[in-house]
Length: 292
Image (tube, rainbow, N blue to C red):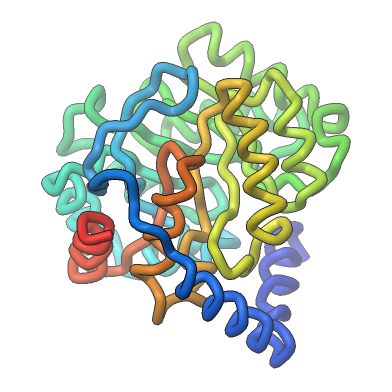
């Protein structure tokens, strides 16, 4: 069984009655405590990711809902429908494409990029490779699959080990070299444990972190307050922070407005990614952010 498949199945296994009752209590508590936001937000707001200098939209178009083993809810739509969905997002001011090797969505993003000005779109992808040779090969393959000469953001994907900066130093060095050559614009990590997240917070190499955050603590590295303290440390060192699991992998589907309000009100996330599976869902997300 592949590593990401194992993690995916393990995560699905959390859907027990115990977890459901815990999340019900958490969501009830946060819904009662939402404070007014300091100002109006929009999905198309231009944001800067930490000190990277990269500017993009506040909302990223996720292509990896339930993404693993080369597929996702978005890729299941088919090439023409997902391409149309991404182009629709662009027309509505979304300039941030979130993809990954594990989602199998590179060719779909490439299809949309062919119809868009490349310099107006930020593409973030992620690699599961854990050795230098594989990382070099992946970067070449990713660019071919995406149909682009460069990748804006490349992350080491789904890191769980506290000592990942030692274990995967070879991959980090490859990404550093790629940045120097202009193959990528910045690099970072996607964390899937609180130990890995704490390591990322103090590691200077990490310029962008994709962090799981929602008010219910669903499918997160730890409880929201603990994760928020780590993110504060990251922000203090100038890292770009992108939120994921904003809707708790569907757990908060009935409290989407509250979850979005929470993410915006934290004042910790430069941007966040949510995957829509239709133009209707996409329009609804955009409207909920504007109405928060």
